[in-house]
Length: 118
Image 1 (cartoon, rainbow, N blue to C red):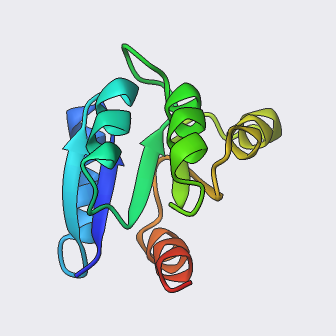
Image 2: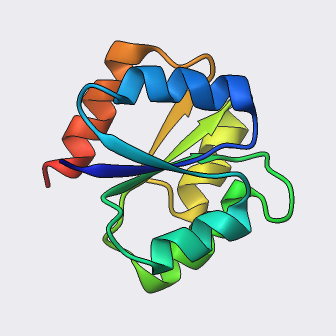
């Protein structure tokens, strides 16, 4: 079963993501960007769902650091900020796709399936 790292500091957002993922994927959590970078280094992650606004290290910086060492690892930005500029920043940082909160389950699953089946 594929393992998803959910980098999300907000408990209710994390709970929503576990509801979406639980039937088809294993998941682990990071509560900030630094923890996400460290967790990826431990291996066994097939995709990262990256909140962009987190304490300690934001999702953009965490994405840059992860992509520098693991360019093949898919990262999907998760943000409540759905402006084109936010999408552009996420993609420029190295994100492979972008999901706006609140996340639509079907769209989220199709993005994950597309990126993990490469």
